[in-house]
Image 1 (cartoon, rainbow, N blue to C red):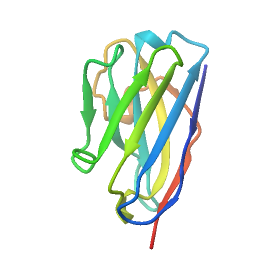
Image 2 (cartoon, one colour):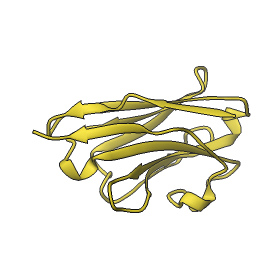
Image 3 (cartoon, rainbow, N blue to C red):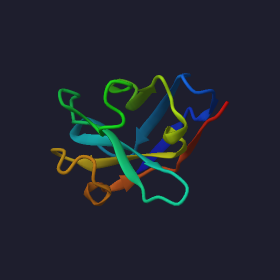
Image 4 (cartoon, one colour):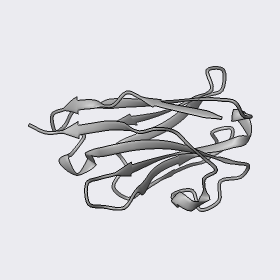
Length: 124
């Protein structure tokens, strides 16, 4: 199983980034996929999750209205579009997958597979 996260970078406050999570080695269509952020000195926190099939989406309070999660079944990729980025959005972003119905979608322990992180910096 591989989850390959990419798309991080450095932007100014108010800027945008799109993160990608490319999956392989398991049945992508049957899994929910989430994005988590780990900021310095803080525990890893759930940011967004999309159900298998993409019909249900979950967002943390800080992500609502600014971030959008979507998936491409053909490419086996989940994207996190992040707009109006703020300094508090900085951190290493990880994608993760849980097989089947999304249970506790923003809880780290719910996930079966994890990718490596991609770093996001928001600074003027």
